[in-house]
Length: 224
Figure 1 (spheres, helix red, strand yellow):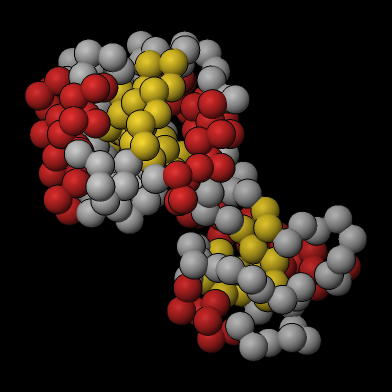
Figure 2 (cartoon, rainbow, N blue to C red):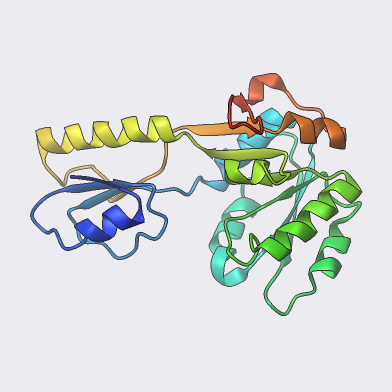
């Protein structure tokens, strides 16, 4: 069985005898051994490589993060600077942190802001402040999802859902042929990273980009 999304995964969660391949399920946790998943997390090193290729003039990146939500990710990122990205400026953020103060510390110190998939940092009121900060200081926001491009993010570094579907199909075919076990990991990273740019925002901010590092251009109508 293939389960796409959290609801489908919850529906299939009680299965024990049938192998289940799941994808696009961010809430997946503590699953039985017959569940094989494709995770939605892209390793920091791969994201940084994509950022470096798409925005070669970005040398320092600022990040607000919640230690309880993203502490491990931050540790990985700190070990992963690549190419032209020389500095990662991390600032802890929680419900007690002053957002204007945290952002002000980044003004003039970073070339871009990296938005993490943290509910606190993607809350509407926080996003409004981040977007105001972006426009005021001409600092592009690099997001993890295309949906934030409509709100004013400059670039999204995300996975390729079409390729992820093909990856799930290949896993299913492999399990049908060879069964579970062996060298099939319980969780597999997405194999393809996709970069989508909001060219209007990049131009407004005066941020140069490299066409070879961009896979698609966002348009308000949702076309490419």
